[in-house]
Image (tube, rainbow, N blue to C red; front, side, top):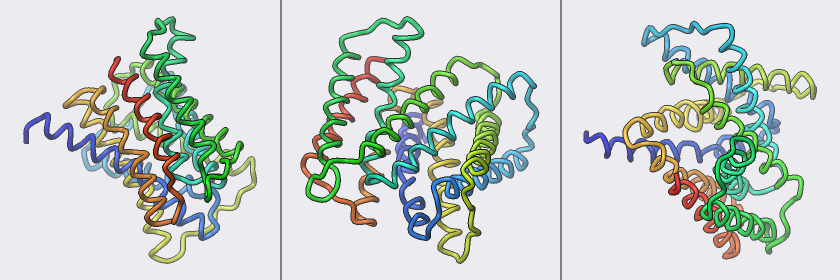
Length: 290
C-alpha cells in the first residue's frame, strides 16, 4: 500500500476509534459503574493487551529509573484527563463533552506562548476566539430544548482538555528513545496506578463484570479508544506527519456525537452544530499554522 494512503487510512481509523469512548462508557454507566470503575477496567485491560503484544514481539519492558519518574508523571496526567472527561459524562451529553475536549490544541498553543515564549500569532488569536465562541454556543445549547449545560460538566471537560495539553507538552519535551509500544505500556501502567489511587481515596467500589455485554463494553474501551487508537495514530504520524493526523482528529468528536445521538438519544440542535463547527475550525486553523 502507498505510504500516504496507509497514513491517511490509519489517521482516520485512529480518530474514529478514539471517538468511540462514549459507547462503552455510557453503557457501563447504565449498569451503575462509576467513572473510576470504568477507567479501572479500561486502563488495566489495555495495559494487559499491550503487554501481551510486546511479549509476542519479544520487546523488552526495561526502563531507566529516572525515566520511570517522568513516565509516572505522564501517566498521571493522562489518567486524570480521562477521569475528568468521564466524570463530565454524568453532567452533560457525551458528544458535546467530547467536542469541547477537542479544544486541547488551543490549550496547548496558549501554554506554549505562556511558558515556552512561543510568539502569539494572529492565527492563534483567531483560533482562541473561535473556540471560545463555539464553547459558549455549546454551553447555552446543550440538553433538551436548548437548556444551559452544567457548569460543573463544562468545568470538568475544560480541566480534562488542560490536563491533556499538559500531557502533550510534557511528552514533546521528554526524549527517552523508547519504542511507541514500550512508551505506551508504561504510560498506561502508571495511569492504571493513578486510577487505583483515585479509587482508594474516594472509596469507590469496583463491581465485577458480569455477562457478555459488560465484558464486551470493557474490552471495547480497552481495545478501540486506547490500544488501537494509539497504534493507528502513531502509524499515521510516521507516514504522513503530525499535521494531517491532527486535522483528521476532527473525526473524534464527530464520532462521539454520532454515537451519543444515534444510540443513546442525546439531543442535537442547530446551535450545537454551529458550536461544533466553530471549535473544529479553530482547531484546524491552529494545526494548519504548525
